[in-house]
Each structure stands twice: as C-alpha cells, then as structure tokens.
Length: 301
Ligand SMILES: [Zn+2]
Ligand SMILES: [Zn+2]
Image 1 (spheres, helix red, strand yellow):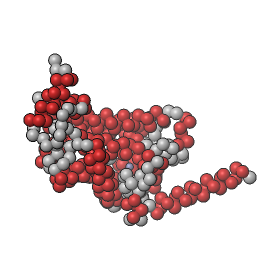
Image 2 (image 1 turned 180 degrees about the vertical axis):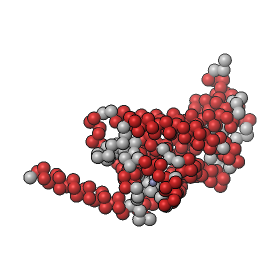
Image 3 (image 1 turned 90 degrees about the vertical axis):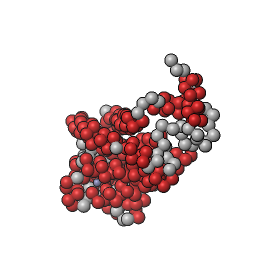
C-alpha cells in the first residue's frame, strides 16, 4: 500500500520528469491527492467526474443554510419580500426535481465536452504544482469581470419579447426566488449563461497558455456561491453585498425577479448603473426608505 510519504516522493519525481521549470521540492498534501486522483486513470473521465460531482455537492450544499433559515421564525424578518411567499416545501421539491433533471440531462452533456476543449485551449489539468494563490485570485477576479459583463448583455437579451416568452420566462416563474431556484432555467438559457462562466477561463487559457483546472474549479465554486446567494430571497446583515462594496447580491437580483426588469447583472452593480438599467430599482428603494421613515415617525407620535 502506498503511503502519503511515498506518494509525495512520487509526486516530486513526476514534476521533475515532466521538465517543469517551476522550482518544486515537495508536493502539498492537496497536490499529492490531486495527482493520486488522476494517476492510472483516464484524465478526461476524472475531469468529468470532478466537475460534475463538485457541481452537485457545492450547489445543493450551498442551498442548505437557506433551507434551514426557512424553518427559523426569528430569521424571517430578513426575507426581502415579506408579502410574496414562494419558498414553500411544495415549490422547493418541484424546483429540486427540475434542477436535478437539468443537471443530468442538460449540464452533464455540456461537461462531457469540457475536457477536450480545455486541453485544446491549453489548460493544465493533472499537473502539479498548482499556481500560486495570488495568480489564482487575479485570474478569478478577471473571470468575475468577464462573466458579469457577458451575463449583463445575454440576460438583457433574454428579456427581449420572443426570447423571454420561449426561454427566460421559466426562470421568472419565481417572483420571490429561493436558493434552489438559481439554476431553474430553460436548457437554452443554461447553455447561453453557462457560456459566460466557461468562456472567461477558455479565453484566458488561449491567450496566456497559463491556467490550471484547479483555478477553474475554484472559480466555478465561487460562481455557484454567488448564484445561490443572489436567489436566496434573504438579505442578512452578513450577506455579501453588506460588506463588499459594489456587489450585487440577493437584494439586487431579488428586485429583478420581483419587477421582471432592471438589475440584469450577476456579480456587480456597475453595468446596470452605467447602462441606466437600475433606475426603477433606485426609485423603488427610495419609496421603501420614505415609507419606512413615515412608519417610524408615526410610531414616535
Ligand atoms: Zn431575467
Ligand atoms: Zn434569477
């Protein structure tokens, strides 16, 4: 049986034999495990399994805190929409079943195509060492910017009459969304908006030949976190937009579902601001603030 030490030595040899120019003396335990995952196996099959299983685990696990929050009465004051309640057990089951079906029948075939395309564009798959954390962070930041811009225009396009009626209307079945509904969408929408997530890494790879699958996986994880939070229907004091300036978050995207217009971006608020597609949202927020002020004044009288 191979010990972790022998695996580590083996990993070092592997890197030496692959003529890498990066100084490398010993593999971290994660890198060793990463290599062990691929060792003696078909790289395309391992990549497919990694992407699909991590997507399932991360997506549904990320939804769990919101499902728990639904059961805690004291947290209901953080629900963004107090009058429209759609996060019922019946709706959650309906969405869970659809999303699971969508993952197996629409997303899995797309993931099958990932490995050959990624290898063609020059992505490092099983190689170690991993890139430095600073490089990973910089690349992921670029993916956030690219995806946000792509999503803004693609999403705005999906609100055009026939596209909305035949494709995007399904996602808007929920005017008061909940976490599981993040990927409740028509297969064509999954394909279009999924392109924004994967095109950034592929383009960067094509131009720089310097991207690792681990960076792409980390990016996809953060993107899933963003999507589930945006649809959660909750605006907690610790929600991302309350401590990260410019972040869209749940409060921004919830308005889009409620009003069926404005706030087309995913991660940041700036495109809606620049292109003037947040005017109704800003007016709504101003009305809400004025109402709150009036109610507070009445209480003190
Ligand atoms: Zn929309
Ligand atoms: Zn949405």
